[in-house]
Image (cartoon, rainbow, N blue to C red; front, top):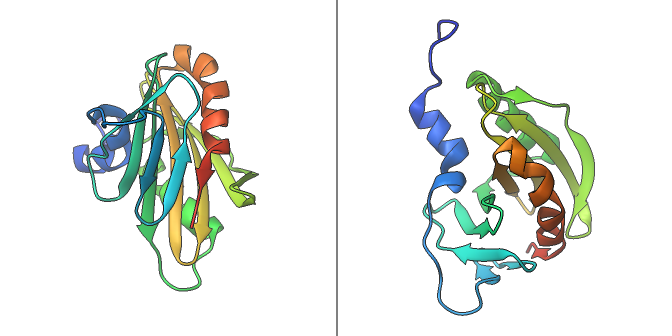
Length: 166
């Protein structure tokens, strides 16, 4: 891809789909139980939306305008969280995202890795938390305008506390 050309729209849509799509669910707008046995108990300020793609099992909108999504990908036997993260970072870099160094953290009491990134134009920032359990890769993503990210991040941390993986 020549320098200065726009990122591949299909690849960009795959990474950013949770940011742009969704419609409200009935019932408690903060509680989602989704296949494969993922439970998300979102904190106050989040509203659940329908997941617009099979790999997205839950999507939320925060009152700040930020979006969050929980995605799952079936991985090869023996896949590690490190390999899952590196594959996703490579996709972000191909689209010229600015990607910070991954850092370890936990999700649902198990090992996870956090990755922060921004679109090439700097108009959207993401925090993604990756985990692997039983050959399934999970990613919980916060997407927001960088000006909103600082306000939405504490609510995202609360949402992460409410994630229960199978």
